[in-house]
Image (cartoon, rainbow, N blue to C red; front, top):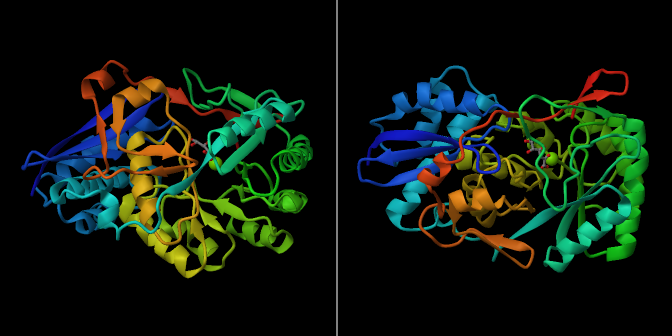
Length: 401
Ligand code: KDG
Ligand code: MG
């Protein structure tokens, strides 16, 4: 079965997505997500200008060989643009193999290790009371795990605070800038979780995303302050590339740590996993080299008692979410999956077999990934340049957003 060509589909049904459609001589095609938020066209060009011409004519059944060919063969390896492009090809090839063998992808990955995949939703509020109400709405929909974020008094806009239950940080047009104060933020987190534990009791899994904004010692202080509220995890407590910072945080707190949404290779997280400096690895299919590479990361993590917790924000398309769910269902050391429902426009462009029920998701049993794209409808939502916000400290210094 030979690869005969492919199309890179850029569209913006509510937000931008890049999707690879890989075609074979047997008329079968596979889909791969290639969306890199705010840098979409770089991946689209990498795929159409450099990758597709190099893989036409290759045997679509040789997934691992094509992965190595793209990774080692380019000489220039790793990095988010490269690894997102490699992921798109890899994901599309797993989709094709599932369709060719008439089985859902999770069967190719070893079969189901569980009945369904526990997911967490995103609750936020301008005030603690609004955040409590938002968490309550998730609980009433059956969620067993909820991430909670609250505005910081005195700061204009902060990461993670949505309108209603929707949150979409990338904005069309020019780059927006916002302000940040770690001192103000630090004082605001423990009162939120104190209130949430009082309201919802000990069984609900509560999560929080620091989004890389603290220094290691600040993060250590926050982790310790949150210990009485037994979080499921504290995410990205400090910039992810500072591995030594995690050693310091670990010395001071028993709050579980999660990191990895910005990682794109096993080498980015190897030390964190091997030294058990984290509890959850949050790499995801689209940014970490596809299902083939994600399985290697999961296997390394399994050896060291680290569980998976794949990134699943709305900038990861339904193709990525489907692939993540097949991965989550199959790997033994699955922990949790992030789930932010896509907009109605996105849902109309991408049909899918995956479904949510009772706080958990299942990828469905359609052959392959179980996702499709309506290309004509996608064409009616043309790509629009969009950027993530940039944060500055109160004195104007650029900071992690
Ligand atoms: O594109 C960036 C988003 O995916 C990221 O900011 C979302 O941190 C995030 C999360 O945990 O979902
Ligand atoms: Mg995050």
